[in-house]
Length: 234
Image 1 (tube, rainbow, N blue to C red):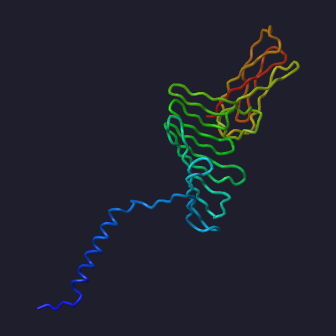
Image 2 (image 1 turned 90 degrees about the vertical axis):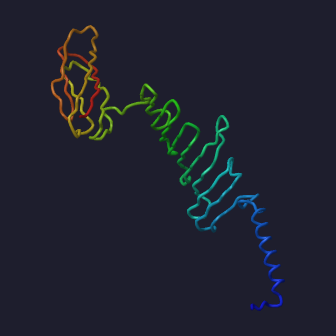
Image 3 (image 1 turned 60 degrees about the vertical axis):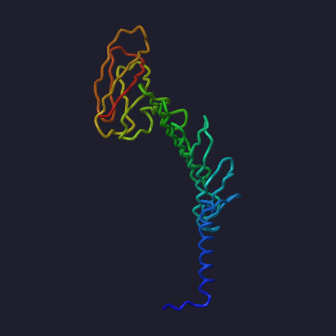
């Protein structure tokens, strides 16, 4: 026959009360910890840190600080967008005064290098280029380039795919050569336009030589001319 200690009933009652308190605590406790005041810092100053700041500079932000100084963090923030949307913004550190940015908004994505380069994908168009002066624009049915091409007399590499430009030849010449900026890496197919200094001149002209280093044009009536080139490397 089992022998029970004298305080067995007391211990049993105590255990029941403990179990009751445990289930009461589980059912009444908040599902997550809540910090009413910020920022909340995880890590140590002078080491790697994560700072969660619901107020931020202008929006809720999370700072990822690689050295714990707070001087050059990467930032994750939520920004209010148009129509009640919320945009996710990822911004690199600003060491040297330049920071890159990735923005995920409703129906569009944009990336900025901080120094001018950008890419944008929207609901009706996409753009890629450098600043608002030089970029490609793609729509549902059209593609166009906004900006300027480097002149054939510039510092283009030998692997350049397109060559554009013009030269003028004064005096009473009957030939001229457009030299490429480098000895091109493969064959060049030039298209040439010629404008004679005497608009009334009756003359003919043709390409007399073409190589990977330049193209030569001759014309039948001596005079000053302007030569225009649009060439592709193939």
